Length: 628
Image (tube, rainbow, N blue to C red; front, side, top):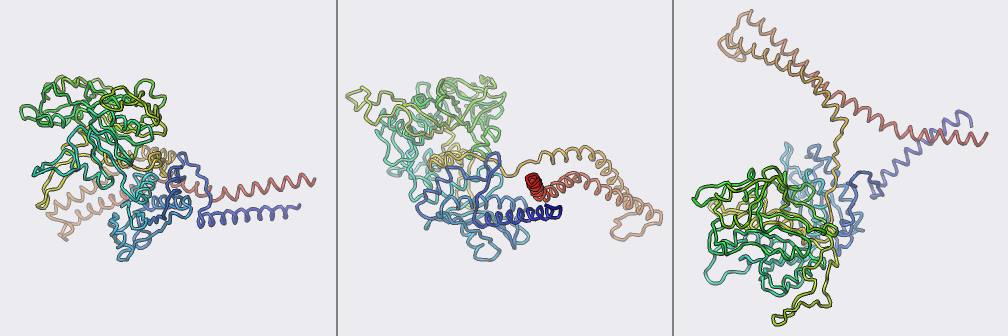
């Protein structure tokens, strides 16, 4: 093969490589071809749980992605994120085998598309050219649900949010929630004329939008049929049969939310006092943690957690505000950023909460994911007996910080063991426990348990307050307690696949080299930039000073002397020079970054042809060696 033939062969290989890559790109974009996801957290790949959700859809679901891209444009970072969302939505459509239809809609101002976006209450962002949208609706038959705004700050939970939306719109009936509590919590109308607000009226009303809530008396003998979630709120004095039913429900793969409390202030209120007043010591107010201990989870009942730095003032025995450490709030630093239940929350408040641990040996079969934890040098505990006796002033003075971290809320999964190894007694006459043919000693299916070491925190007096607005009484949230409870129960009530979804990485990755270059440039130029800023300010001050000496404002055309004009021109020229110098320095701050960008662009442009040329050369040398 001659040199000219070798050249043309390499050129042909380059052209072929270019056209093959172009065809692959076009076909992949048009028909959703196979992609390779090389990101660390498989950011652009659907999880098995999401694939199962769309794979088992009985009826088609239409996803309509409202994104402004023509007449009104999103900000650059939102536009970039919209492409990330669209890519993932196409993955859902491809995995559904035709059950998920994706529609991309650009809601231009004053069009039917914008009116449709407004009817679905999608969030509109004001721009000079009109309203911009970045939202999503899911529709199956007549059921439509929406994500009003796809927030880039929730990117790591994007797949979770999308799968949750699809699962919720595909659910034909509200799941049943069995709420079991020793407290006076009920969704039945009061008899007679007693219309006093209950302990959880707002909570029950909010839950009623998602669940069919069934309040179960603690002396019941069984759970309602078809229950999806069991909520234990300050469980105490449960009948053995009801406790056994909950036990077997969990071991059969059920979902249980347990809010247990070493000292329920609302129970003390039921015992005849105000929630924050002292009740007789004979009247205990602790939950019964026996069920949880049987499952392998321990909630401390002999001490209440506290934090002297995060305490909130409550009314003491003298009707004066008291900083009471066991009444505290926690912020973002105490909330898990890896859980969609807590990542968006700002503040939660607790009243005499306990702490959660796994019983020794249970860690071999159970996994505990911490959702809320109390950390820091000012954390500590007080004995439940002392806190129950009060008064708050005395308990606060005796509070001692130990700095030990305490888990306040956690999600527990794995293989649970029964709290009734021998079964339960058949009736009141025969107290001998007996195990039936369907008795489970350990989990038959993976169970789901979410534990919170406080029960007061979810009741209305601790979550909302009444406020008058435009002549009407409205409820205003005091904190994020209600959001946390609702999200937790909704997640537990969702599909098993939804619960298994975890946070993923973000497509927005830090460029470490760029950050380093910016930091070096800042060090190099900052001192000089500061000096120029100082001199520029002095020059401008000189001009203003001359203006004052002239007896007025230069902008009003007052007459000044030639000497003053020359002085003004001098300082204005100096200010212009300094401004230009400042502009050059600021340009230099990003010059190295821009140079790196240009090098990368050239590298990306040449690397394909160079690799193809290299392979062509190797092929030519190989053929030549064989010919020789």
